[in-house]
Length: 508
Image (cartoon, rainbow, N blue to C red; front, side):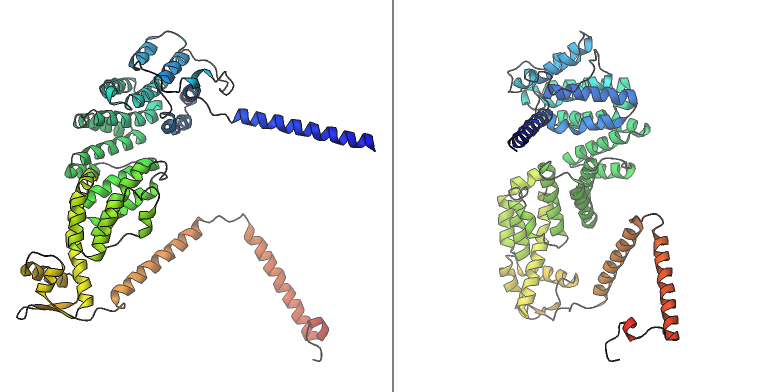
């Protein structure tokens, strides 16, 4: 018995050592790649995408661009180019010439500590395909955009990269080209020459449309809309939207940007319902708030203003969102002023945060809210008083004169905001009883909601998947049940079943 127990202990010790070894192997496998190793792996994936004509490998590379560009510096880029280009070719020297000489920022330790442990086993390529060179140019361009001292160099590199892309004219380069156009626009914007990029974008958009390059076309349409909105050229932006068709196969981030610019254009054109719809689509299609907080905040700023212009009050929970709480402080004060109908509070908030509103390009839209504030104040007064003089209205709403109060009250009565009439001889407003919650308008609203729910139910049923030949089993079960019922009925008629067989109570 003692020998058996010792063997059991030995087997347990062996199992523990095996588990430890497996745990160490898993830790080695899950060690993240260094920036240089990741760039080399991405170049290999691009080579595979070109050789196999599979763009999914290129898309896999581009999905890591946002995280990778935050980890690169001059040392990482120089080491990656040296390892990718094993031969001394002109392309290698050109790429190295664009990298500025500077002090490393801490990623140089990631270059030498790899020791080949977490690098994928990939064959060495002496000269990568042109798509790999454009990808390296894209990384260098993003690195140059991180410092104001290299903005001019980024402009020069973007112009040279665009010329090289257009001269190569390769369809396998289209996904990378869509990302390059974003970096080119950013270079022109930071360099203060965004207006000069407009002819370049227009020509590239026409070319992408003729080649049916949906990804580049979607990116360039958004670049042009951003350009027009930046310079307040809303008429030209609206003409561009009417003359072009946004590709249906575009990615969700591109669709989110497109709906955002459409919402801004429609809001300026006083088409608040369409603006509200487009901004809702932009919020739904946008990335996670923690991934793209800047875009998430910008969309909600214009969305809140449009909701106020439509006469609605945004939900309070929106202003408690962790990403939006600090960014929407000034807009929350505007919402409180509109909800209470306090014109003085509205004017104070507007003058206090005018600089932020102008930076967000929502100042002109917020100025339009003055009439909404006055209407809200008049509605509150009509609910509180059955009769109130125009002088008191002027004092309570901080209006300039009684004539302005009379005009505003008359317009509110005509628009259906309040129920009442103005007695000009005595100079007061008489308020009548408010409408109840019944009528044809309410029934029509409920009919629309019921129709929407029924349509959603029908579409859900059509989208459901049913197992093959499942109905035959149900038919067979139903037929068997009917046969058993027939047999039971015959037995009852023949008197073959007694009360105990029927399961009846005793005594019957």
